[in-house]
Length: 153
Length: 153
DNA sequence: ATTATTATGCTACTCAGTTGCAATTGCCAC
DNA sequence: GTGGCAATTGCAACTGAGTAGCATAATAAT
Image (cartoon, rainbow over all chains, first blue to last red; front, side, top):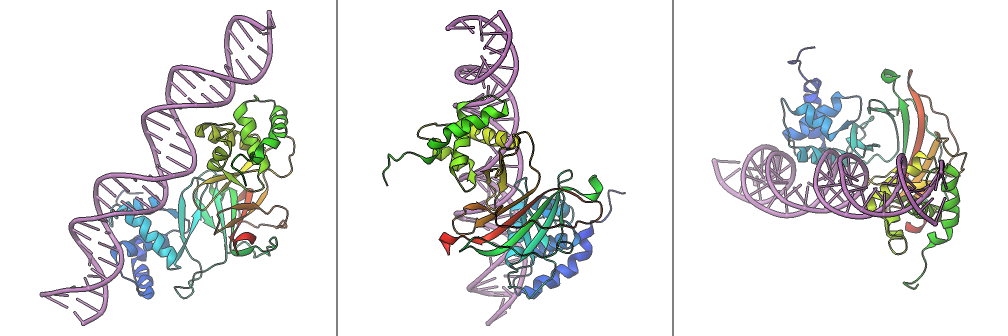
């Protein structure tokens, strides 16, 4: 593995650009770069992960990374996951419905206690019913499984 | 409602003391007081909730509150819940098995988006099976339902 | 190109939670 | 009870994620 290896997100810049264009909002370098990072990763990324990935070719201020990530959530493009280490992690939404439609539904994630990586389980976890006490209205359901991932057994 | 009303946790001091005695660890004022707070609340309490409850009759340093809460988790007496506001909340474990036995199992909570209160759903949510990708070993499963509680509809 | 609008970058801040250490307290042996 | 040691508390200073304000720069519409 060479130090000069190109970061993986570079091949997602095109896709990122068109996704952002589709929102009708402003197309900016940081938005394209941050979104490309999320597209390039199958796992959830923290603000720091993103900033570190971009530092060489698309350095972005850390505050801007926060703001862009939040913007992506508001656009319905990604969602955020609260980790045990009090760090938000972000991940592309699986099925891109029409933007502006806030996807309020199920999320299921696996977080490895050893390597801290967060995986998306939306494909493997079946839907299930939730019965709440009287008067309680659900808007979103998150399932979090902790344990060891395949690489950390 | 008078200002001089006695805080609810005072009536749980006895129970707290005997629970701490049962661990075989040291019996201290802060441990008794903090545990009594958790016993007195049906909802999850943050470190700040606890400190505020104790300020009049059993004032405890905030660092000590943190440490006692962590100790209670390690003793298997309570568990912690990560909130969307990056604040830990703590709650007595429902069925007290023998201390030292770390309860690794399901937890289910409801957090109200309006009042931020966290409720325990362990009684109302049925168990369900989780199928993980190959090689993934689960150790704990948390279910988090967001929405509006009965008081905030 | 010019201009109004919006996003970025920077600095400084907030706030939950942690660390180091000295002073105190609980508990055991006597 | 009293002495002594280990564990715990309290305090102060720190860390690190996330946020707010504002001047500058970039976008996109005219």
